[in-house]
Image (cartoon, rainbow, N blue to C red; front, side, top):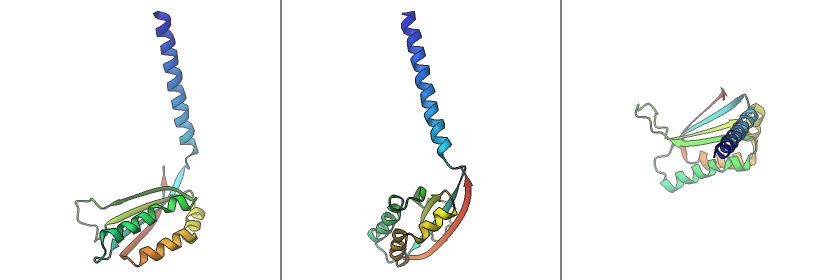
Amino acid sequence: MRLELTLFTFASAALLGLAGLAIETKASEQPAKVLRHIVLYKFKDDLTPAQINEVVAAFSALPKKIDTIVGFERGTNVSPEGKSEGLTHAFVVSFRDEAGRDAYLKHPAHLEYVKLASTRREKVVVFDYWSAE
């Protein structure tokens, strides 16, 4: 019984050690800082939910088409403060550096997306900043 408990303890410690190593390795591959590209939209009032969803889906597909994108998030405004000035949708695209962002801006997939989105938005705000992860 004591030998089984000792083996179990040793095996558990080894597994925990390996899990910690995997986390450290992944964390060390992350860039020290990332360039965040925030896009906020107010869509035109006469759009259907399906037309808005088409824009959201097209934007959400860009990370699979543009390899300089290292992170992507999206969502709708849920703030109770009432200070969104009509902006309803947010997208955050992350890059390792300015060169990655610049390649994204000129990429054919992004340009095609902009053609679609520009006809359906009433207002857009774009803001880029550096963030330490």
